[in-house]
Image 1 (cartoon, rainbow, N blue to C red):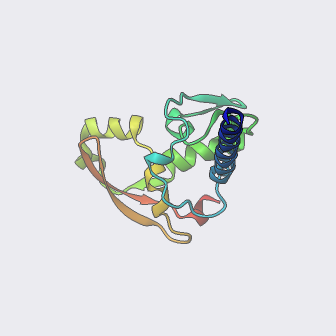
Image 2 (image 1 turned 60 degrees about the horizontal axis):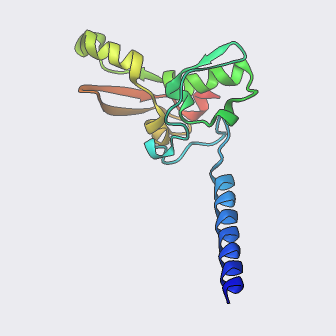
Length: 150
């Protein structure tokens, strides 16, 4: 009887591990998406303890690197590394005037703001203006369209 239970336990473990291995493949995403990302939020961060990474001479900022596993970033070209930084850090236009922001908010935006939580709001062919509340700063951004970033 014990052998039967042990065998059933082993089979159960194998099926569970196979299920999670298949799910891991299902959640793998391309480095730069061809189509708009859907529902990117902080829960999609793949590497919460990411640090800035140098890839082919280009430093991928830790704010962008956290959306990719270290395996995703290995062997990338300098061009793709630049695209990653652009997608998560620079693919927007600040709509609030610099004067209205104040120096503290400008510094917070420059050093801490990233676009991962907003990428799902982008449209294919037109910009979208989004109000943002970030670290006690209120401002608006215009997200570049997916077509503009190609």
